[in-house]
Amino acid sequence: MEQTIQPRAVIVIFGATGDLAKRKLFPSIYRLYRSGKLDEHFAVIGLARRPWTDEVLRENVENSIQDALSPDEDLSEFISHFYYKSFDVTEKESYQGLNEIIQNLEGQYQTEGNRLFYLAMAPDFFGAIANQLNDYGLKNTSGWTRLVIEKPFGHDLPSAKKLNHELQAAFREDQIYRIDHYLGKEMVQNIEVIRFANGIFEHLWNNRFISNIQITSSETLGVEERARYYDTSGATRDMVQNHMLQMVALLAMEPPISLTTEEVRSEKIKVLRALRMMETNEIDDYFIRGQYGAGTVKGNSVIGYQDEDEQLENSRTETFVAGKLLIDNYRWAGVPFYIRTGKRMTEKSTKIVIEFKDIPMNLYYQKDDQRNPNLLVINIQPNEGITLCLNARKSGEGALAEPIQLAYHQNAVSGINTPEAYEKLIYDSMLGDATNFTHWDEVALSWQFVDKILENWSENQPAFPNYRSGSMGPEASDELLKKDGFHWWPI
Ligand SMILES: NC(=O)C1=CN([C@@H]2O[C@H](COP(=O)(O)OP(=O)(O)OC[C@H]3O[C@@H](n4cnc5c(N)ncnc54)[C@H](OP(=O)(O)O)[C@@H]3O)[C@@H](O)[C@H]2O)C=CC1
Ligand SMILES: O=C1O[C@H](COP(=O)(O)O)[C@@H](O)[C@H](O)[C@H]1O
Image 1 (spheres, rainbow, N blue to C red):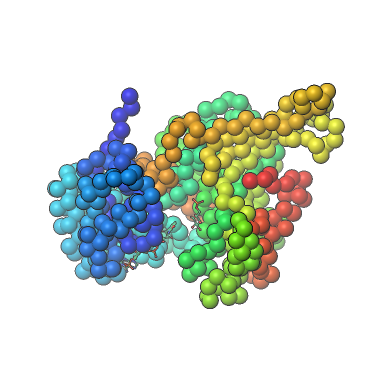
Image 2 (cartoon, rainbow, N blue to C red):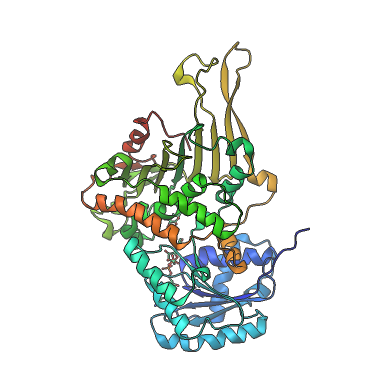
């Protein structure tokens, strides 16, 4: 039986009173503990300005994991591993006592000097925190030291470079773990396995057999409480620069020579380098943007983006983006990769559709428009699995065919809910496996690509809002595929 590795570490969370800590980090640490991936050799220090105590943090941790608890579960042992220190990251004095607190916990929990610094705070603080950790000797330990960085990694290529420069003045690249939580999703991790462990797919995985690839990540939620951040970001920075381009890279990369972090990253980097950079005057032919107006989502009336918050009035920020990407290499020349993502759409769903080319003459369909091309659908969320769309004889109808589906549901086979993305990524970072974190080169190439689009858009005023909440985005998104003879497959 495979032995579960139980890494030891003190985890220091900067921003422990915030939303991410409550919704993702505490529940993930709990699940790692419950599943035996963390044993007694760990401690968590929460830092933020609020004058909380250990007890208040522990109460908050307990509240954050209520949904995951079984009746009468005793949490006292688990929450006793959590400690709180009121801390202002902008004040140097705050850092002075931190080393001593960590050292005491290292002794108490025998964590072998391993330290994971998790920056769950606004990115403006990342560089300064990394530098202070260095200056105050918090990296000088007998074990490993790693820095986990939340998104967004910069606002554009120059700001990302500046941030990277600041981080690299304090930490080596192999100590920096840039989170892209999509890389922690079970079915995103499955893309490589589906491709490289199945001859029937990998042999066909190229421009001779695939006509186009579609990636949709749609959300029903609006901007919620994040208006300030989102309005300076928009869907392109928020979703395309990171999650969508990462999925493109995984779908398009060559098989790595091994599954090491370096080899996988190196193949992804090659894809990002091969992305065709559009000329400024071509961008509107390749990328379109949208912003939601009022509408109905899942039967509920909702307001438009500009009415969500006073500061969004007359906003020109895109809440939807669709684009066509071309990858100029031997395998993919001529195959469009279509992506779309947006808020307040019909469904919450992330799906990849690989559409295979038709056979030259299909004897079983009487009209061309009745043909059903073979599709491989990778369902990332909410359902996890794959569906293969084929054609089979229509029973009792002579020489006619009809579409059928072969479906695999991940949960039905594994019998348990798959681990949450953050749970896997925290565990990986503690094990020192950076494969599912983004290398600086990936971040830089992605910014280079989206900056070009954003620069072009910043020069003209879109007529927003241009799609109804509860729809699948503006009409221009459908036009983008129609002019190539394709259409979006239903999600
Ligand atoms: N929330 C989410 O779903 C997601 C968040 N992220 C990223 O995670 C990071 C955190 O986001 P989120 O939790 O939503 O943000 P919040 O605004 O909810 O939390 C920010 C945290 O920073 C602390 N903080 C602010 N200023 C200081 C300071 N000077 N010194 C010490 N602590 C400070 C706040 O605590 P206090 O006020 O007590 O000081 C709080 O704990 C961001 O980079 C975000 O982009 C990424 C993906 C999803
Ligand atoms: O990074 C982000 O992702 C979420 C969508 O993530 P998902 O796992 O629910 O698909 C998005 O809502 C958010 O705006 C963005 O910052």
